[in-house]
Length: 381
Image 1 (cartoon, one colour):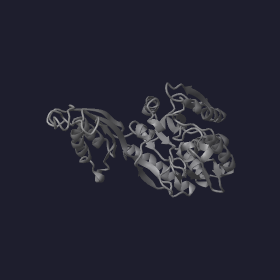
Image 2 (cartoon, helix red, strand yellow):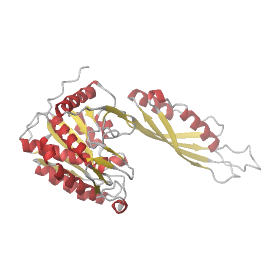
Image 3 (cartoon, rainbow, N blue to C red):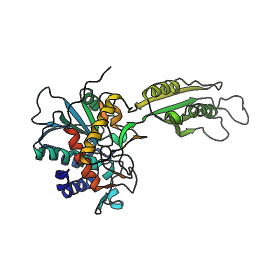
Image 4 (spheres, rainbow, N blue to C red):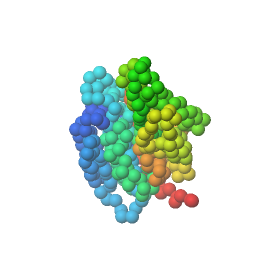
């Protein structure tokens, strides 16, 4: 902890530079500066870095120690450098530093977490400590838009990792670590009907909007708060004009779910819906794109590691479930995962976004301790 505290001012200055390097997900060229900063810092910490080009994104950064021993197990540090904020946000939402807080676009989600990765690795180098489980870093630039390009890379890395630490921001002002996350999916519903004049030939058409209203009721009937299932029809469109029976209608549906079993069941139920209005037909596409991060035995084991490290540092850690999804949902399918190790604060995707600076120092020390933990026992089946 003392080494982290000694570098508090340096951490704040570094984080400010990251925040000033605006990096919106939808402007790939604006990822270059922040990626350059992170690559240089990782190389200074003794890491070999490799930039993975993106097709429609700013690409991704992979790093491993230059002196890695062959056949040594590795642990994965996951972060993202993209933000939801459009170019020019700093003009109205400047980086503002107070004695114990910092505000600014992306400071909480999740450039504070990226700062913790850099300074935890620096602390280990300063102390001459070499983890038994090799730290490997992966930073993507498309997490806020679904990690479509980066997910295959994350899957490959997670499959062979001893564990994964995700530096997404913590949960709530108390800074709970995220030991479970709900899964999420998106579905697209299209109804085909038949147009007709609503006054002259009311029986000659088949109303797609009428059928869609039935589909929506069926979807909402699948909600189950006790099981952590929520279904929301967030967008609808259809029809031509008031005196024409609607020949088409569409809806976009968002799904959140807490268990993989329920995710698979709901996906089948939604894709299996059938039209009931004569003369109409349904076309439904989509899937549960990110499966839930569940409280598996291996995830509980890495949470226990965090509790032990927290006690050694005098930190009283708490856990919680996040309603949102992250790359931790992906890693959890393949390896022990602990999420929410990043900044403590509030305001993800909101104008009041901020972090507590002293908590960032504490979480840096916690991450360094976790990196020094022994390999996890092999899972029992």
